[in-house]
Length: 112
Image (cartoon, rainbow, N blue to C red):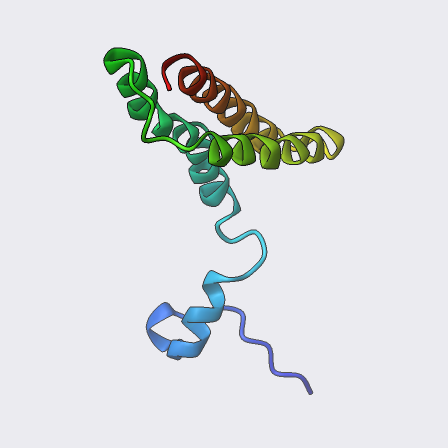
């Protein structure tokens, strides 16, 4: 005879059982998706202060063109991957990141 627990109060669960409950498939999928959606937009926008600084001071001598070109080149395959697999979050993130990187690279080329 198999013993099946129909309901177990959280207070009766061991620490290990409570930890495992957090990692069940689908347990926090909506919450994680919401956080990732916000992060996909907010993370690339972290470049805005750099962009504002470049274009207001018109100085970009301290920035490395090679680094920003590598950032740009690394995001192109990510965008292709997101488009091929129809992952909206990846496409959103990489599209915004690519736009920000192009703006920074243009600033470096203009003001370096």
